[in-house]
Image (cartoon, rainbow, N blue to C red):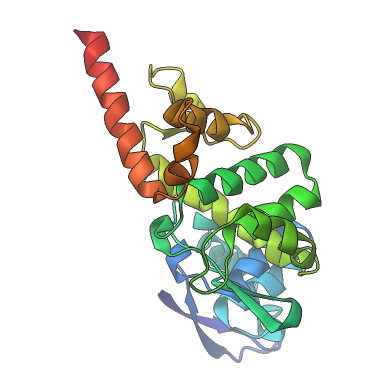
Length: 264
């Protein structure tokens, strides 16, 4: 957090100053749920810039109205990292409450505990939503991602819950989409041979997954899963239940082995 102090005139034409203090987050790891929702609300025009700055600083909106344009500009500069979409490896909205007071929880940081099967459904519905902007795809994406405490992922849970998830405030659902985009940015760092940005892909011979949602093949993970399993139908569930990070590490090793073979 960055601590700041600002002197301002409560009444512009009287040379009397007051001082207010505030703390501003400096990265995604310091952002709370309300601030994440404020980002989504600002981008959709639901709140003003002053209300947005109030959410991030804790300062009252009526105080912010007394600041001059330059002070507001300097405050906005403190939040430039939001536009950069820097990598972030955990979910800011940790839990959701749906029907009958049921609570669903986000995956652990770095997708620990997420199986390859769960990731396939999550990422495929996310890709579908990026392409279609259809709320059914959005709700199924979230239903694939958030589970009950100690609950194992099953495809049927998506069908059972996506309509209830659709009753959640849309800003919450859009915030989860934004957060997942940051997770994808983290994946490009953690597994660069698998996840790679479009502009980097052209210069590489590896078979990467494109991280730009509108360019990714929605069926890409299904094809990769089939390549792993082949005709070994009996062991489909075994592959799907493996931790996704284990699968990514295995894929990375295979890509490196193939690269060495091609270079011989």
